[in-house]
Length: 635
Image 1 (cartoon, rainbow, N blue to C red):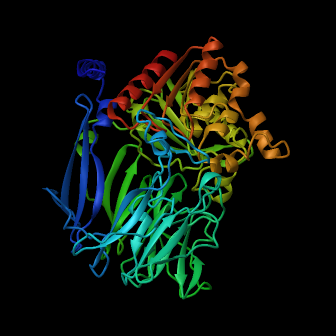
Image 2 (image 1 turned 90 degrees about the vertical axis):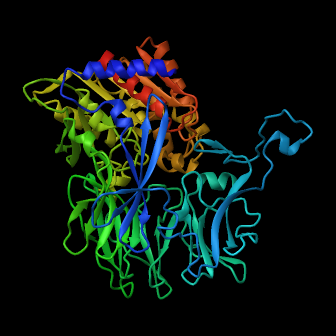
């Protein structure tokens, strides 16, 4: 798309909204400052962070780094922060440095096997895990190395000739490796499996490599699920996150601590799951964040002296917002990220003495102060089986209850992710409401924050109770006089896209429009082409050809959206990324072809270079433009 055309679109949107009070627009959303914490300074007196600002028309991003007093004040732009914050890659004794590099260990391409055939681009595989998320396997593996800081020419690979990744692909980072406090060991996280075993398992482990003996030991061999995020306290005590069950990527995440050589589960009896944690500076507490009744909040738990003296976590924050991550601690202040449905992430400090949560950065205050914001309220909905379900309702700015509004059911992806006070730069509730829609976002079965049982119910029941939960939410809000029941829509991505496809055949005339982004449409072809097979084995029940597996047969026969296309009767926009290997491209193409052959008003928005998300800025702008154009046409 040329810059001239983009400017034309931007101007038309600007003029179209000029007559009304200013509200959020796609351009404003995409050009917000994105705040990213770099860390707390070595002296503990300031916080280093960056803001990234994107220009839609020019397709350029400018990143600026700032230093701000941790007690608050005016941020100062700085050129570099390399020497201001601690470098976790440097060993505590200052002698060594960790770094990562890819190491080619397997022949994959035609050129690998036939170097004399120079123009071949064939890829040859003889086992699974041939592609992952958005990347094809090329035979190179990310490995951890260390070298002396004095000359740096003596690099040693701590995983020599091992075809495994650390950091973990595709999302692992520096949290996957660290030094022991005595500088004698490197701890690292990896999944030492290959082929089918890799694709069907979540069994990562934490390993310890000893520099003196150059030997490796498995610290978590007995646990068969995820072991991740190892961290040492100032007292040299090790903690990490653990899921127990192999193959279940959304299992309850617990904090494990070594106490006198015993692995103690601090949160085993706590009925929720952990997102992330940091040690207290003194080493006698752990601070963590976890879903809590439609939000994500900050908690603390004391470190016991034995496994018989475990206390329950204490909740530190409470409010209609998410504490999305913990940056670090300086004495009595914790630096955290906070957001809500009307505001993108900003840095805050939490005072451990008085409990005050104070805003530290103000990167987007000018934008939000210049627009009308949405009203966001909790609504308790009674489900078909008599449960109370929290549902977020987001109203258009300047909402007038005497008027009628088109209303949209938002179906969350995951499926086991929290529907909290998040702020997406795509599925943005504030922007949807600003376009004149009431948004109904139910915390249906399968979401954390309401206990483990509620979270786990969705597995192997994809078209069951949670679909009834969706309909209970939209039916409940439809009783209100301000809801235009002739203009109801249903939207979602990933599992939310599956939900839209499934409800298109089961909505009994409720909806006038659907939007499905990267959703599962045909569960049989999904099983045959997705890469993380542990996901479909656990959530769908296993392979479709296993006739003796009642759970799998129910999923593939009763819950497969492709089986109900004959009942489709509603316009549908289908969005698909070609590099999405988790929900592969055929899902969207099959759905669009079915809709077209049925003669249903439909459109395909196809992104050849995008994966499960839309990451390119101009692609994202077009995504928003087409999204709201479709709703305008069909609602």
